[in-house]
Length: 64
Image (tube, rainbow, N blue to C red; front, side):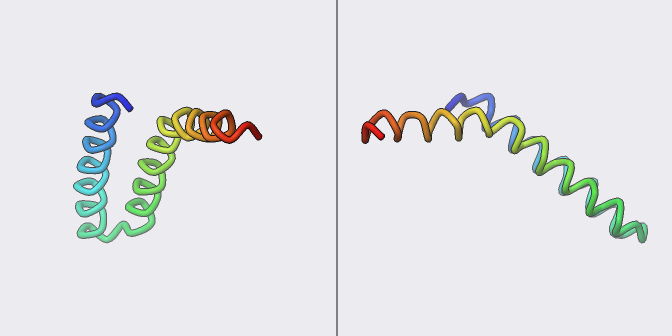
């Protein structure tokens, strides 16, 4: 796994956390939830190729 990807995920986590807290304190819980959901989807979009590669490696390892 690339180190840059880990830093991207950490940056998104920090940014989403700050934005979510600001929105919650201003009384916009729905927007805070949508911000958290968008951050999660963005990170999943980045991670899915690595998960697919992991399952392919496991499949090749056990010759399934």
